[in-house]
Length: 293
Length: 341
Image (tube, rainbow over all chains, first blue to last red; front, side, top):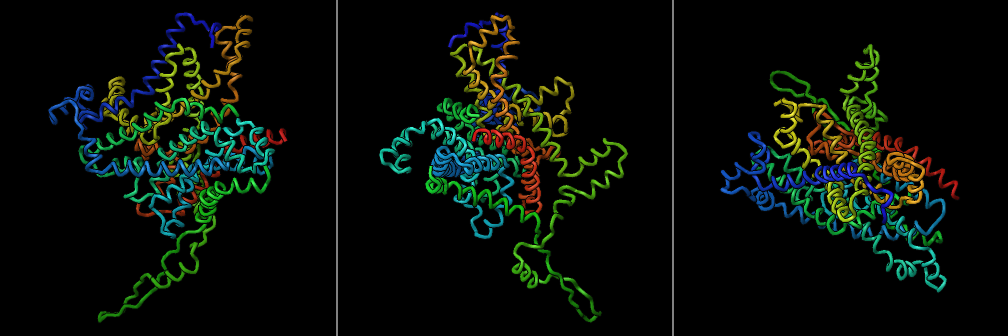
């Protein structure tokens, strides 16, 4: 794209680059700092004596003969079995993404190909559901789940997360499907396909970009959830995020906080990789709803 | 699409939403007007050589029977809504008649847990939302003016605070702002106050939470506005330039009107998301200084004593709050739909 008209005077150019640099530092530095600090001992990362200790690791050198230590990671992953929580997280995310995409594509497709008043009412209801903080529903789950004895297990949490994600998934897929021309499945129907066959053979092959993007956001919603997973999972089935909170809550012993730091860094890595590979999809997903209005 | 076909396509997602969103709402409402039965007490005469004493004890059988007969519990109507932990009608009336000025009244209001949570939630929502829009716009304009080759890199780093798990993002910032962290230390040095600490200062805590909110959500606004800038009508900008508009005027009169629908969209999403602010309060360990409505519910639900009735009443009040927040948007969408049909 040509920006002939936006030719910048040098002063403005400097300001722009300066501001961009500052913003990148604000956005990224906290992660870098925490990742660096996770290889130190607590008295370095939270240094009362001198803040430069967090960089040089003076105390770490005294305690571990080296400026870096993996004590935090060892403690979290081995002593506190953080790998179990990681495993649980990925099980839950996998099933949430698969289920919510399967039922979401069907529903989103139907909504995009129908123009009655109830379509609109369903979409608005979904918007209202999307606006409700998930924690407001948790009080409603507790009694029935205790009663049926399904509290604390992973399948329950998966179904709840799928349901809570549905409004968002529906809206997103709805706007993606609206971009796929209606003539495509209509001509298939003229050729004698049923609606489902048209969906199966004509729409599914062209819908993947939208589905992948929506899947990414479903994954993020499940991965990042704290309110539901913290309240509905028993201690053995905990995912990463409630476990991090549990590290903080346990009675204070030195080094325990470094378990939390190490597990926070561990939980950030998958997200980092996700953004690295799917930056384009995330951006297109965010704008999909917006540009439609 | 035919009604019948639509029904079958929509059925799975409809069932999921019905059983796990609509039904829980009903169950939350019903829980908020019932409260668990109190134990049935009975008086037993205990006689020993020194005389007879009347002892009050719990009649387990009768309690169990009562629970079987009325599984919902004891009907209390709106009692829970009006108690001290929620809308606190009596306390408000008392504070109103006792206070001679608004400041006294509001400070008394601040001592009631529900109003305390509501004050912070509303402050957070209405401070963070406009700041996010402003900062997002600024970043979008900046990145759009950068050399095309480094834009991708800037977007990559910008996305990190947004995709990060809210609790983890809050912790990462909290550890830096903590009095022993790098930012907290810098702040102590700048203000030359060695005792300055996040844990001791309500003002600092509120500010940090709001800064976290902006840091977390600004990338979202940025990406939306940046995408909007890519569809900017270049001929209009050129026309404005030929007419002698300065850079600022071009932004003010061409770019911003072009982005206006996106601003509405970001504002809507941000109002919904900021109203549910919850994780940062857990991450910052801020409950002593700031609580939000979501945290208030979480606090009732957690722990040994799960206070379901109280949590349900708070949930219903929160849902009402969300509804009030959404009414203008819903009315507008409804009118748009009507005009389209």
